[in-house]
Length: 358
Ligand code: NAD
Image (cartoon, rainbow, N blue to C red; front, side):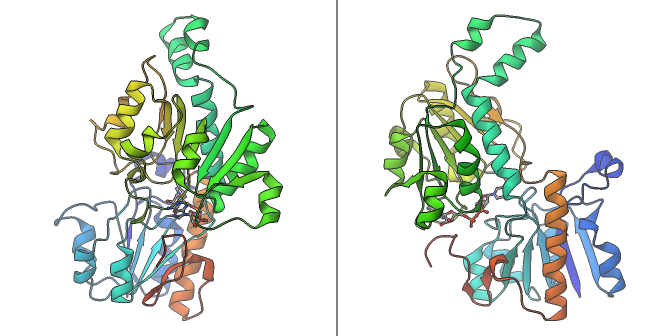
């Protein structure tokens, strides 16, 4: 059986740090195990275009392992060519790089390691809020330049305490962010999700459900995006929705880049409608060198907290998603039932209710 994995290159770092399991070099720690079971294991980072290893090997692979950090985009067209493909496993959380509707049609299962990096991402989102609200990046850049002008930083620095903070999506990550925000004493915690949180869980973090995303953003000083990318969320944060934001709001997106319109966000930051934007996810990954989000700024020259996609691939997270990927694959090979929460698409139908209403 052929198992194909599309992972990111770790180069020198992966050789020096074997806990970088999600790299081409360290192969999710699964190469010896798969070889001992007599399976062929192809691991590559070459993922884009007709001459890529991904497109070459997908035609006869039975198992595809991908990661959101370096997504192998499995389009409907590629699914048509993947005659042997039975199961796609996402090493991490977020399977939008797979055409899920096409997987349903072809009866290809899609599983992810649910929960494996949700704490890692929640911590990153909190860090993003702090660095934007406290105007951290320009302050640090000033220090590296050798300058010292407190007023230039303080003129755009605030506290999280007393702010209205809202999450679009209140699943595993969105809820964890609210739990972590509670000790900062926000004025209000709001969420918008088509799944309402059970009342006990709502009162545990003292949050309130709002009926529409427009209503949410119009009340918030800080908005954080924590829903999957699907037909209902692609391009959701566009010029129209941004016009409903409070002037000078901060926006944190560690969910998926394509939930935001890249140019609308860059314009909103340049005009000051947004005071800051931070996250680690991009509409194309790796992001091109001239992507506007690399260098966009607010009118005072700050407000950009963008980094490469790594919030969910800390070494702690890699240990969890590598173990989870192996466990899903082992169950598949042994014909054992999968853990239900990991199944996004089962045989011929959606099992997860997080990817829109189906
Ligand atoms: P989850 O399934 O536990 O929760 C997602 C929630 O979003 C669900 O409650 C769902 O109902 C809600 N939702 C779906 N569509 C919505 C919409 N249109 N409006 C409002 N809410 C909507 O998932 P999770 O574990 O919290 O992860 C969420 C997403 O975060 C993943 O799908 C992935 O895209 C992203 N993620 C990013 C990283 C990273 O490294 N940056 C890592 C893990 C996950």
